[in-house]
Length: 505
Image (tube, rainbow, N blue to C red; front, side):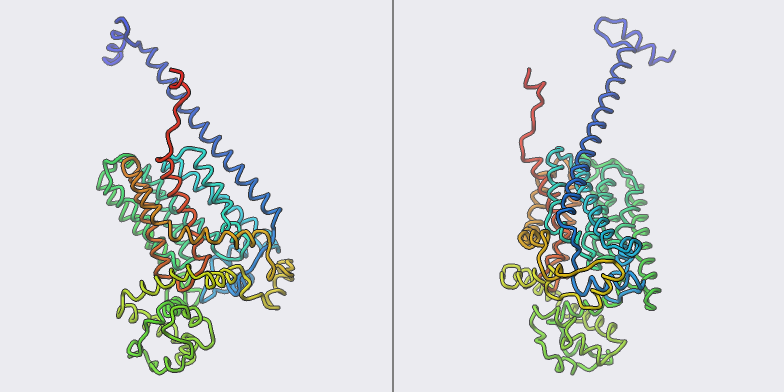
């Protein structure tokens, strides 16, 4: 018998002392209680998942119509069947279209897939609120159901666009990062880097977020070491995790860009037309001297008939035949992309705060009812109707008769139209909600609170700097983060429930 066992036996012989058998019983009771708690948590999660599935299926039966946003949707459809790589849009999303609707010959497969993505997104929100923030079950479940019924979520599950898939990838990245802050398990950072690369392939505007989340997590753990809820990890191990996360992230993004470059016959890049889009973003900042040494005369500015200084004309300068990009293509030909990237970089370097001014002007347009209603109509798909070629593709390859759906409201489209202001609320209230959440959780859960607050600030900043128009679909990633912040903060504000056993005393 060991010395410790002897001491326990001797202590057990004293009046009122615990025996070895008593300690074993306490340990068994503790394990049993822990197993019961885990079982209860699993049952609650299963119930939430069941509610989400039933709700999505009911809504699919209510409105199973697939909708198009031209010409993005047409590009994705034709890319899916031809396996071509678009120069101006994602090529990974057409792969999903091909593997779902392309294989089955029905767009219903794509609709079911995106609805399933919506279920996973809502379930991920519930899991994050429970595991990372300790939010009470009913509040976490309520937030998950609200996200599942969110107008933009339901609408874009029915749209042939990247929004549903990209938002799910973003939430998975956040979920993995929060898991690392809780456990210190490096494998979660690998998943974050992989899904972040997929996110960047779907939405190029998300590249900064996608590249920063995995390396940021070890930094937060190092900075917040010793605070409640932050794992105690040696700084040497955190340093190794940071370097490894950085290397994995850079490797994944480098390989994606090389893959894209190989498919398009270009140098490694995220998007072939990224320079074109950057130029369109900063058109009001462009000056004649920015064309020096590019091989294109600044006289091209004189040929553009659309106003160059008007921030609201930036989208037209990208796509319209009388815009700056079209004129530049006529003069530079295949070199237009490189020239556009050079001019855009010079314009930003010459006036670094100009992009902020343009973004603030776009934010102000959300308070112009006539303008955002016009933009909302475009986002609903009414701005540009599918042409005969696209309708023929839908009918012959995907067995889908679009009919009057393209020009008439469906139940979910009407719901989205009436609830679109919710997205505007999320845009302007996300940062205040994140700050409020950070203040409320700073003492108890600083790691998750800081991470989500930084992510919220990054998303709002990205919208400010990268959105050249009022666009409701650009705001699709905001509601999940807004609900996360509100639910986490409310859990600290609402009075704690007193157990019935305590009341009985």
